[in-house]
Image (cartoon, rainbow, N blue to C red; front, side, top):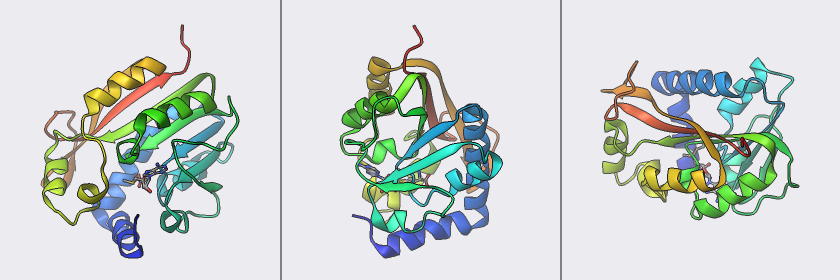
Amino acid sequence: MINKNEVEKYLKFYNSGFGKEVLNEELEFVESRLKDCKTVLSIGCGPALLEARLHQLHPEMNITGLDISKQMINQVPKSIPVACGDAQHLGFNNNSFDAVLYVTSLEFVKNYKGALKEAHRVLGSKGKILILMLNPQSSYFKEEYKDRDSYIRKNIKHTNVEEIKEFISKYFFIENEEYFLGIKKGEIVASKNLGLASLYVVEGKKDAR
Ligand SMILES: C[S@@+](CC[C@H](N)C(=O)[O-])C[C@H]1O[C@@H](n2cnc3c(N)ncnc32)[C@H](O)[C@@H]1O
């Protein structure tokens, strides 16, 4: 359970110069992948800062957020409809969304397999799944993980991204995987190098065959 202090710490990060740059990079990336989708479900949306910015860029896009933490949901801007719930049991009908998005959240979900099955269920035919995960091989991750008080260390449930990808491929046709968002000594650098890229991205389709 995330407490109020942790949420404040989390928001402080996104208010810092570095946090703002990270958000800008993530937003640009997600926007380039989802700009043609009309209905998007962001699972584990946290304070939904990226989702709110995406909505500003695409007011025609219907973006719904979902998170298990009430403390996080309390921070979500009014422009984003949000549900409090568990990724493993989504309260949405089958075929409800054009895209399901996970921004550094799937690896924080206890039963990520159940969550992926649910994502598959609520996606429409040819629906898109976009998953941004922390790259455990990056120096950014390693530094954060060393700190016993960091949000990542305290809350992450899975660090084997290869195993997660393997499971994704059982349910989705994987169209792209890449390393992204290089971070070196607290600064963003243009690098997809495994040791520098803080994120590992998997992009797939529900039915492509
Ligand atoms: C690292 S945060 C990412 C938040 C946001 N996507 C971002 O990029 O700032 C992980 C989020 O996943 C949420 N989460 C963890 N387990 C969950 C579950 N079973 N169902 C829904 N959300 C969950 C947490 O509450 C938290 O908000």
